[in-house]
Amino acid sequence: MAGVTAVIDDQSATREMLGRDALGRRLPPLKQRLYPPMPKDFEGGWIATLAITALAAILRFWNLGNPVKFVFDETYYAKDAYSLLQFGYARQFIDKPEGIADKQILAGNLDVFKDTPSLTVHPEVGKWMIAAGEQLFGMNTFGWRFMPALFGTLTVLLLIRTVRRMTRSTLIGCIAGLLLAVDGLHFVMSRVALLDIFLAFWLVAAVSCLVADRDWTRRRHADTLTDDGTLPEGKTLGRWLLLRPWRITAGVCFGLALGTKWSAVWVIAGFGILVFAWDLGARRALGVRHAFWKSALVDGIPAFLSIVLVALVTYTASWTGWLLNDNSYDHDYASKNPATGVMKVVPDDFRSLIHYHQEVLSFHTGDYIKNATHPYASHPAGWPIIARPIGFDAVNDIKPGTSGCDAPANSNCLSVISAVGTPLLWWGGALALIAALVLWIAQRDWRFGVPIVGYLTCWVPWFFFDDRPIFFFYAVTMVPFTVMALSLALGKILGPARVALQAATPRRLIGSAVVGAFVVLVVLNFAYIWPILTDQVLAYMDWRNRMWFKSWI
Image 1 (cartoon, rainbow, N blue to C red):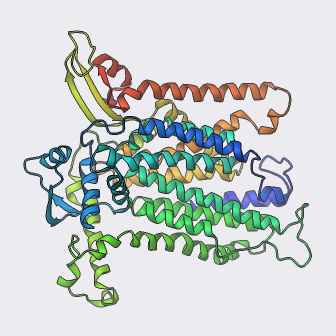
Image 2 (image 1 turned 135 degrees about the vertical axis):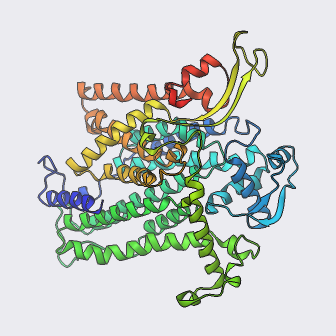
Image 3 (image 1 turned 90 degrees about the vertical axis):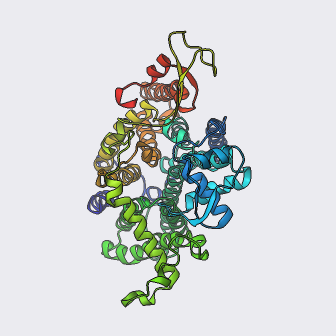
């Protein structure tokens, strides 16, 4: 990855110095290339952004409290979140007879927790976020689903603004937001109290900050140049800033992503390499001598501190509740096991926390989980084409005339929540990602590198864990990057904005028709699968018509 990004940015920068792009076409002046002007529709851009965000919110908050039951792993995360809220650490809950704790909570009896601490196998940020909704609205289905719906909606807003910044087009940004709003997987994950929607949000937030930092820094570099791209007498080439607030903010967001699920570590590594390539490309475009080594020292070290170190500090801080509660699981490990060697310098609380992490890692990689099976296990190779989605909830054999079932007398109804992506969006996105990789390499277009790095770092690492049950809903972190690649590709089809200022050309008309038709078809596809995303009562054949492949059942 490092070699690819460095080579791409190096060749791009060389051409920029010569005033030519990858196809040999003359480029705008260096000053404008460093910081292309943002769209001038500031108010209109925000009106469109908020309108699409409002649409996403309506979809996600509609009938959010139903079904009135624990859906899939909500039975763990909702109760762990409430335990954190009440006690400051996770406690075990009564489990005999099976499901008794869930039944009591749904009946309004919250006295379901034992005095013994619980080993939870994911960090605590996502559960604290669920707990915030429970604090606001109570320990009920709406309460524990409120924050997932809110942060799923906010992801749409962030993606619009990020793609708008990358493309300098409000239209393309809004297309990205609309597509994310109507993706089936992102929609379902925004309506259940699982952790992955929070992971997706914090990753998109971190990447958004890195894109803003790229703009912020290059604008300051551009400000040192005259309009014709030359350096005024007495000026130092480039204004290299060690303190870059957007990168520090990105580090905080990455830390919160890591504090939600450990899989964020791969995304941090991937974008760490990418931002180094961006800095190196900027230095070479400005003609800095020995750019690689200067970038490694002057940019690379501060970037590591701003992103990686800040992320680690943020992640550690997210364990404050565990550290402050002596009753937390394994908190007494250090007192029972005296330190030896170099560990003597580590405070006991943190030594216990390290041991806790070792236990969690053993759970995720040990023989127990490797020998486990699950009917909805899904190999990551099939995720891009939705080979095996997951069913979160199902009620079968609903008789005609009951619960709204209008099936014929010789048939039954059912209601399901299937975490399935909107097929046309995912399949179009898979093609767009291939195109993005080609355009990133062939045209040296940095924008296409963002979805490629994001997608691959959210997807490829799971291949190394395919000896244990893994599930399609993990792919929700890939969705924003899929949509980003798709919107960039649609922007290419649509054509440059300046064409729109000329007389209506076949190029623009055809591009607009293709893009408009695709977006409309995706929206209609989402509307068609809506019943199987939202627990609607369907006659068996109506349900079967929406389960397009045998592997979906």
